[in-house]
Image 1 (tube, rainbow, N blue to C red):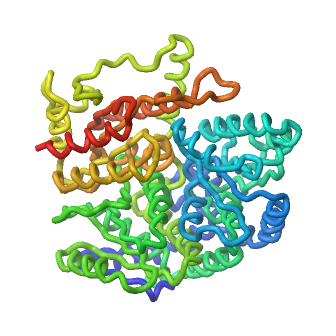
Image 2: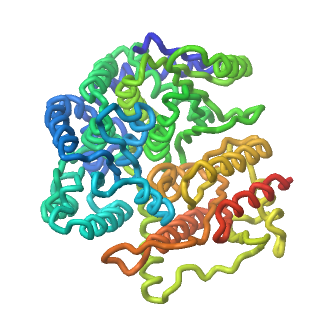
Image 3: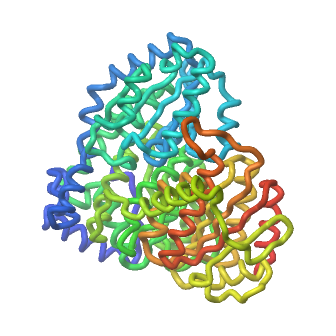
Length: 568
């Protein structure tokens, strides 16, 4: 597998070769295989956390023996007349199933799998309307069993099924969680059709090859044995002590050394049939490395501006031939001095290979960056802020007392003078956005975070805004929907280097949905999540502006695109 890869690293090749030799002498690969936590951090406290997150190194061996159990469950579901599945999850619980669904589609006679990972009321309502509840099975997927969004999704749809048939509502539900969680208990109490208990020593973003990824994959009709076989082949290749022949070590060392040299924007080109892999690897790399004021920022789905800064490394995941335009573009980038890595993918089942290779490479890169790639210390900050805001809402009946700094039509702009010092009081909305983008420095990036319904029309306009910002600033850009990005790039935003410029987009919901057994709605939860993350960014002195679109999201986005187009 490694022999099909191409590394055009130019002047960085020598440093990468030296690093490969250094990790060989330090026996880093055998130590990782032996689950030695000191590869990343010394000290008892770190060792305890890391040791409980290394199960991904052996999970394929375990899951090969569970394929029969999973396939039997899928056959039972098909015989019971289910035609669709909705996965209720966030981050590591939802991204692999989404990649599998978008890459493979659904095989004849199997279940279409939809992923719900948004607290946006319009999104939840759209999912509900798109399925026949009586023929739909819901997968409640949470490692901790207490993920707020997943728990609320579970409550909402469980009540919907109880209204149809109280005695059999539980038959429509499956849980995937760690042993001993509250979700396991609820699954037993509510007579779920199945409760899958995942190995507890696997973090969410490293769980693709466990029950979290394989159960939804099998429901789609994917041959999970074949997927695991590809992963096993890569695992054996990644155990190779000769680092230059080890595909995971080679990739990880290249990424780590390039990041240390300032090439920390990992920019992806992906063949169309595996385009969705970018979302999964984005979470893995950003959440694993973005801490202690360092990290590697994955950039996926970007319509690239030109010329590029000297902070880029380009990775092309190539499935098939005939992508002459991409190959030509990469050749020009290479000639301009940018490092370019090409990884050949033989077919869609090589996702198994890619899942493990990137997990191993991320672990190696984390060791070179001297961080713990298995924790997510800053994710909790936004969660704590959200919970505090919900408590305030229940006590005071309101969430947000900020005064807008500027208006244009239905658009309202909010900012904090501590983080956007170049803005003048009483400026127009366009002038505030101009001040935000003019605050750029070499090596910065722009993150657009949108708390609106993920839809084709919204996506089209947001991509246009992203492209316009990229062309104006010549910086790397990212686009994430809230709250899903909080479980992905959100860690990098707060824990990584202070090089982010943030455009947060929110809107007022036209209608709302209740959450059973809660005193707040999905709309309130979404607003609290957005405001909680905004507060966390301000606390970390990040440059951030919040634009509220009003109630007409599509019209608001179009107006915002026009404003961004006029920014100087």
